Image (cartoon, rainbow over all chains, first blue to last red; front, side, top):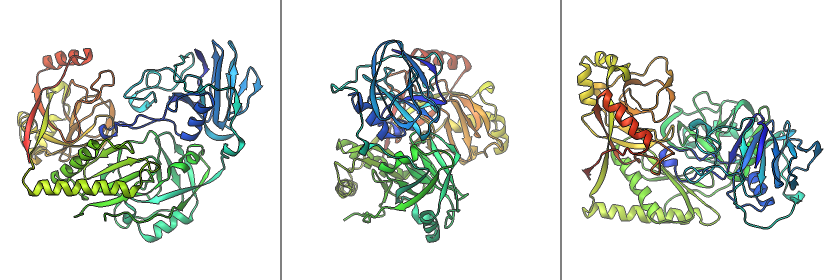
Length: 296
Length: 248
């Protein structure tokens, strides 16, 4: 058990997502940076799907009522345990009565705190992830507040000891990122120049960048004719382009369906770079080579 | 495959598209393929999202190649075409009956819809509740149904300025579309009634009352009935009437 002293800017309980209900209009949610979330659970010996705390830009602080093995991964939020710096991408023991305090993210945007056993909140439709827009999952479907008491579950798998992630596996978060994309499903609604523009230009992440989607600004991506389609499904990483010609990349809390043409989608392994990018950071796109897809 | 197209949706997504427009035939093909794929219970298929005219198959590219998934889809489409040609095509759809109170306190725009179409409010209610509507897909918010088949005689334009907050259960008309809001949200639809039921309720075992491919039919109820049903819904004891519709 541990208590929220300060909830930070926007901290929610997340796991690997609420899969299986998109056909009912239920967004997947789940950790934005699946890599940092997964590593945090691994470092404390948790099951792959154990619930952790995702913090955004400005971290939270917690007081522990019992001794606990925890791990911090993702954005570097200058974590201090009773005033002494602790390493990011590492697992360490917090003694009973100690306070873990995170601050502003000096690199990256989202930090993950995993506790051995995972966070114990009710399982809603197969997941503990918080989806705040419909008040589903996590702690009463909302972000953490001061005074919130968090209980620890029993989602453990391996016996582990405190330690660091090997430095080779620690990602570097850059101010300027390159995202690999696959074109489709509606790339044929854009001019050839528009696709060139997307691949050759630099886009900037605007302030409208949250768990639902990242709006970018840069050279206009022109449609051949219209920007609207008969709504279809939106995958994680889909690049929607409304009539104004600026891309919106759909993230964990995206709605299940959308009505704007999608020029392409960012591939899974590169989504973590975007999830760790801040407003003001630059984004470039590169095309993945792929074979065409068709029936025999 | 005739008129069926495939597209990438990232490296974990395959879009199978049956057309670009909204119609029943296309939509029924979408749901048939979705059911066929789900019946295969292939562990490499993570989730299937059927929409108006296409479906998105999420799969794990590390345990199944895209080509393999495409072959499976092709086989299903071929066997469906054969079933269609041999006349085996008969399917039963469910009609879920949704109680709606069309009384003034829940229907701020009913008069407008009536006047706009030159008919009485009672006629609007009569027409709106007389036919089952196909649930083409769900999306926008959890449990939100995109319905088709409303009579053009009660069509009405959206509000110029959307309302900031619409109560959950509000039933509305937007152009030739109708539907209801499962959770409180902003919206520009003309509101002609309200249902006491919850299309999405995470507190009960059966969290969603209907799926895409079902039909919904609205049933007029009184204010008293509205409050009675609301109590049952809150207690988790309400289940809507479901009948069968023969189609095919």
